[in-house]
Amino acid sequence: METLVLEPSLYTVKAIIILDNDGERLFAKYYDDTYPSVKEQRAFEKNIFNKTHRSDSEIALLDGLTVVYKSSIDLYCCVIGSATQNELMLTAVLNCLFDSLSQMLRKNVERRALLDNMEGLFLAVDEIVDGGVILESDPQQVVHRVAVRGEDVPLTEQTVSQVLQAAKEQIKWSLLR
View (cartoon, rainbow, N blue to C red):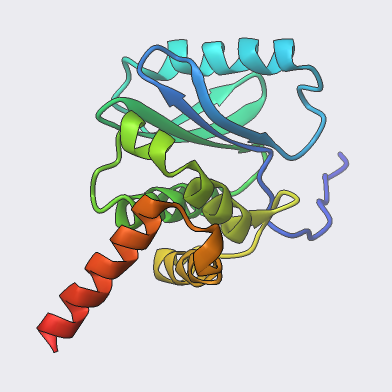
């Protein structure tokens, strides 16, 4: 009897998806060609939503893939890996993403707040996973790196609300010292 020997590899993610409470895509980033067309991706996302939105568990096997997910108010965050992928690593990515969003959105992880801060979401996902390879699992590091990138924007390119928010933060910190 032959034994299957898997070659060592980096921990990888096939996709990161965030759906709203109707199962519609708010964010999706696929790192391979498992679902090459948008139509196939949307069908897969509907399948995920139908299987997970009534469930209390945190993991599912779907179409030969491992799906770990977490819900918050009106969002469903999902991290997808292959069936042979370590579920704990996928859960670490999911928790890092969720905790990073929680800190960036000031504990207000819901659809409207997420849509208002999509650039932060894009930066956070890019800090956590690059090309499917897991880079970071510490939400503090992710939030720090995203915040540093946000501060690099010149004053002339910031919106009025960004300038006012930055001024409020500076005043708050100067009063707390």
